[in-house]
Every structure is written in structure tokens, then in C-alpha cells.
Image (spheres, helix red, strand yellow):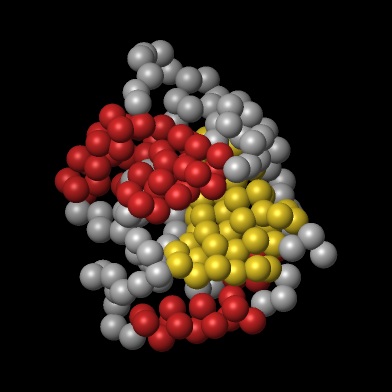
Length: 204
């Protein structure tokens, strides 16, 4: 089983970009690639705020994509916090790497998210953003077990999206109902932005 503690990376030379500049640069490449699963900016601002609530925390993003939500998370994290972000698509994650890998707080993992989750020890993350199938619609028990007491789990895209496949609404409804039945977490569903669910693991 894998445990993540601290990561150190050498940051390349060059001037630091603002969050706005980074988001704009990533957005240009995202559009050029035709990637249509990037997180809503409103979701990004929420992630930044939630990241800021975990000073020194260890955070996990399932589904790097092109790195827009990754950038928002990093903007909220403290200097001693750490973020692990996972994706199996090199074409998209390489965009995030180009713009964000110089930040020593982030580690990029190129791996199937389900395999990654299955290899982890439980109770080691303070914040999880599940933005891919694994961690939301599969491997859910294992993903929630990764939260420390008081840790937060966030998903988006629970309201109808243009890129949903046929029949996906029933999958979302089953997921939301499953989350509402769980006793070890407290859940809030928000009919806002792309549709948000936030869950917190109880101390007991």
C-alpha cells in the first residue's frame, strides 16, 4: 500500500505567473485540444476556498484533465500543503504539467485512477476532489476511506451536462442516493454551478 507524505521538486527558473494568467494559458490549450470536461470556474473558486481550509493538508485530485481545477486548488493551498493529482491521459495531463509542475507542492501521477485508489493506504487525505469516474461512480468505498476524520470529499457535474452519455442521469441519481445513506459522512448537495456534492468524514 502507498502512503503519501511530503514531496519535493525542483522548480524551473522563470517569473511566477498569477492565477489568472495560468488559467488563461491552460484554457487556450484546453480549447485547442477539444477537451470539454474542464471544471466550471465557479467550482474552481470553491476548490480554492476549501483548499485554504486545510493548512498543511494533503490533498488528492482524481482526474487532472488539463489542470484548470489543479491550478485553483494550488491557489488555495498553504505553502506546506501537498496535492497529488492523477490522470491516465498524457495528452491532457501534459498541459497541466507544463504550466504547474514547477510548483513544489504538486505531484502528478499518470495512472488509471481506479488502480491508484486501490493501492493507497486509508485515512491519509484531508481533501479529495473526485473529477473522474473512479472515486465517484466506482471505487467509492475505497475513496471515502482515504479521508482522515474531518476530511472533505468534493464532486462536481451532478447537474445535466452537454457531454453526458445517454442514460447517465440514472447513474448520477444512484450515486447521490448512495451518498445520502452513508452514516460515516455528512453530505451537502448544492444545486449550484455544475452541481456540487460535499461530504465530510465524521470523527467516529
